[in-house]
Image 1: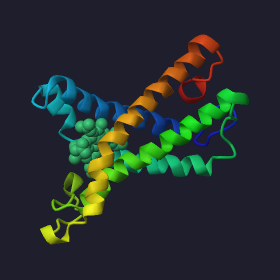
Image 2: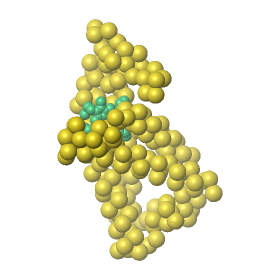
Image 3: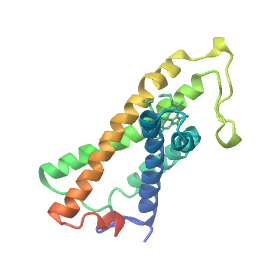
Image 4: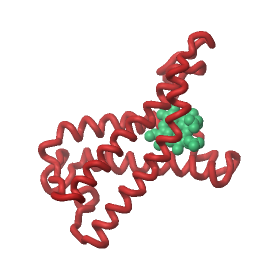
Length: 180
Ligand code: HEM
């Protein structure tokens, strides 16, 4: 029930998968509505107000997800053989790598920057004096966080499209492993 098995993913993997999906939708919904409707639009303001806090929760959930996947690696549903199986594996590895890299780049910027970082009032990184700023860290965040996030957004769309392709075209009931 809790553990993954050969037929389906267990409750822990499912909770992490759909929890991460919902929070990703929140993050991208916020950033997309900001781009499309403008920074001042009520929807954009509502969805982005807690971007850094939601992003931090996502980071924790993603780390747990990676650890849980590693612990379960020998009992998860088997990968499909052939080209489709290899493509799926590559896509999932890229997704995991980006899910870790995107919030890490932002957190690195917060660590190296002047303002400090205290999500939910808990100080994780103290503010720095201007001459203590770690420019390499802030540059990594500024150059990669948003850019990699959009690349990840495209991969997520591909991931959803492939799940639907399995469901609607191949009709192999693959979605049941995570949703059934
Ligand atoms: C998986 C989690 C996250 C996702 C999917 C995500 C996604 C995004 C996206 C799509 C943008 C818009 C980039 C643009 O304007 O083109 C953005 C910007 C931003 N994010 Fe995140 N983010 C996440 C986590 C975080 C975290 C943990 C922090 C802070 C510690 C953070 C801080 C920011 C800031 C300050 C901006 C505006 C400046 C910039 O573009 O870099 N994000 N994020």
